[in-house]
Amino acid sequence: QLRRVLEHAAEEARRTPIGALVYVGDCFEEHHEAVTKAAAALSLRGVPAFMFHEGEDPRAAHTFREVALLTKGVYAGFNEGAAQQLRDLLKAAAVYAAGGEVALTEYGERMGGEVLRLARAMRSGE
Image 1 (cartoon, rainbow, N blue to C red):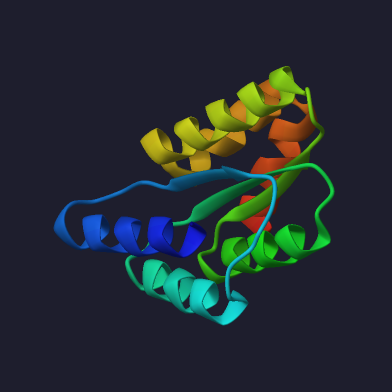
Image 2 (cartoon, rainbow, N blue to C red; image 1 turned 45 degrees about the vertical axis):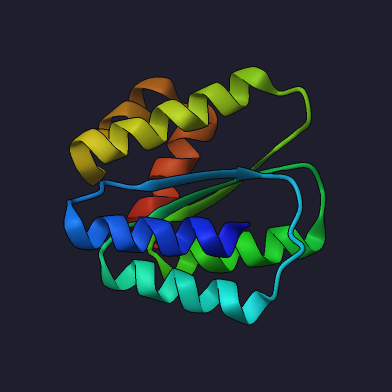
């Protein structure tokens, strides 16, 4: 139900500022065009989407990457059972939501690894 999540976030962002959207998923079974349209609407509200993808589903990876790109967010994949990796990614998203790009960059430089890659991706718009 990614489309519904994106639409809801855009509607909420219309009412009150939202620092970021975090989405964790492992598959994608919706219409790609409907989801990218909802992502574009979210982008107009200035809300970046942190799209975290568990597993190897290529259709999900393609769509999640596109949502991240459209919203000026970031995509990151992680392996099943990688609880620490997901925890680090979620913390990074929270740091961004609370303090913006500068805070995420500083946090990434302290943490290194996947968090630093995520911070660099946000900075470069990948």
